[in-house]
Image (cartoon, rainbow, N blue to C red; front, side, top):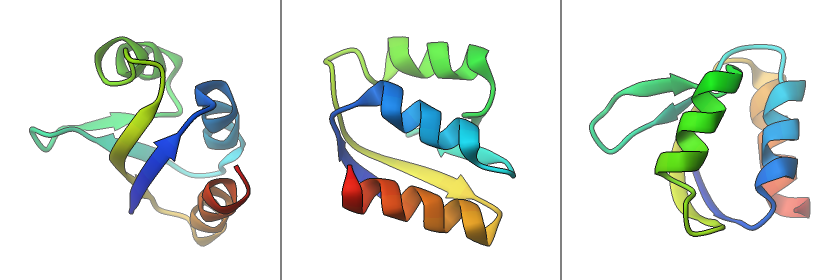
Length: 77
């Protein structure tokens, strides 16, 4: 799923941390980073989110309830 315009990165990672299954960020090169890993979160922050907000990114969640949680986050902020 494509996620756009994330303004609160901390809230986004809290949402990811609440997910039960694996949540991955798909890089432009096709690599997948496990966003539940704190190390991957820091790498993502340094590389992708360096300008303060996230214009667009692709993530993959494997559990239905995690997908719903992430969609709710996007709708409610």
